[in-house]
Length: 104
Image 1 (spheres, rainbow, N blue to C red):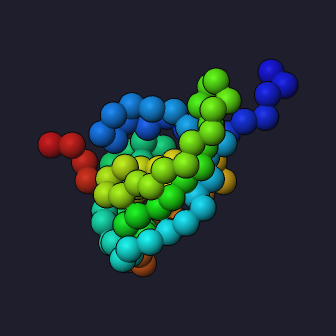
Image 2 (cartoon, rainbow, N blue to C red):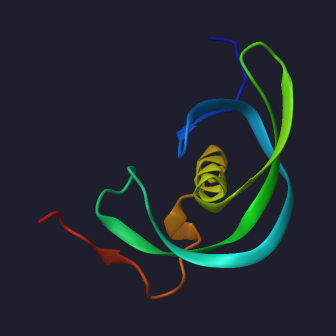
Image 3 (cartoon, helix red, strand yellow):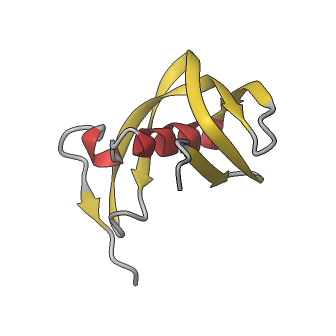
């Protein structure tokens, strides 16, 4: 298509898109929480990520944004930005915490 952009669409608390997102800062404690991924259904493990991040990105109208995120939204953004770099949560998982959870 001739367009070189990295795009994520998240829906953690409300849906929105980020074009060429870049984490420009981290703060707060690092939190260990369980993550999974639609790329590897039913596989979960503990991942340590900063609680709060500051991100720069653009919207589809080329307007620039710079905002801080914490909690679930922060974790989802970090997870999705990792995908843009070819990183899966299993590359960051705490050793020996991967486990399969099959639907009951």
